[in-house]
Length: 273
Ligand code: A3P
Image (cartoon, rainbow, N blue to C red; front, side, top):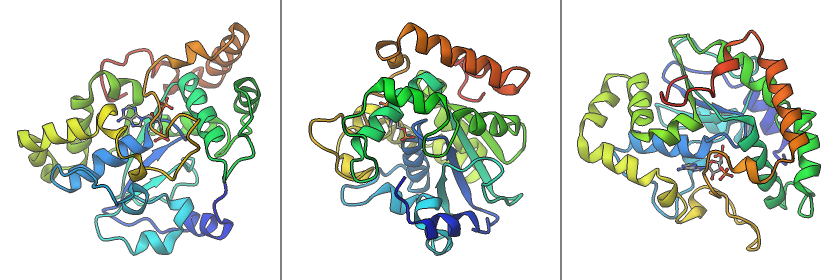
């Protein structure tokens, strides 16, 4: 992943504080989108301006380390891709977990890996090659299911909010309200203000976030899709072969059987799983 190992280790040792809000995801599941929603909620509906980078405002714990995060103004907004077991815990911190179906996640992760030429030697890699790594769990942050299943098992805890990317897509307004409600009375008040709610809805839409992408990520080669790429549910259908579909479906069934994660993508009509 190309993060300095000392920052990664220091991130793991961060002491979570009451008042911290963590956005937790497996990579490519809607992290940046949720970071921007949270940032806008904290800034009364103002979008992140050009010239700022979301990863300095809502930093990635494993990338910047604990000192950087501890020095943030309160309340801290923190991004992490860590597993449930490794994520720093405080009973009065809040955890927003966003899950995305593994098929679209794999496709998005493929373009991500291809595009970050500074971090990965995969510029010429094919989807078939990436799929083999993904299904084997040999990608950054490990196996998708090792991440998903334990987090979803904790979805009933009072300081955990679980959302799906798919439900956020089908009803973004409900997702924003669900996040504000989870954060508490001061945030409910913000989204009761129509101007604020409409502004968050507008500026966190795929179309708006596709503009001025230097706010989200470093430069990528021009011939490759941008970081905010397609933002669709079901893009996997134009990438997966029949046998890849069967393999991942089988792995999904095996790894989620008897767990809360088994049905989370079946009904995307509610933003909360
Ligand atoms: P695609 O590659 O499928 O387009 P992350 O932020 O976790 O890295 O996730 C990136 C994925 O979320 C990309 O998916 C990106 O396009 C999508 N995304 C980012 N902002 C979005 C938005 N406002 N609405 C919908 N999808 C968004």
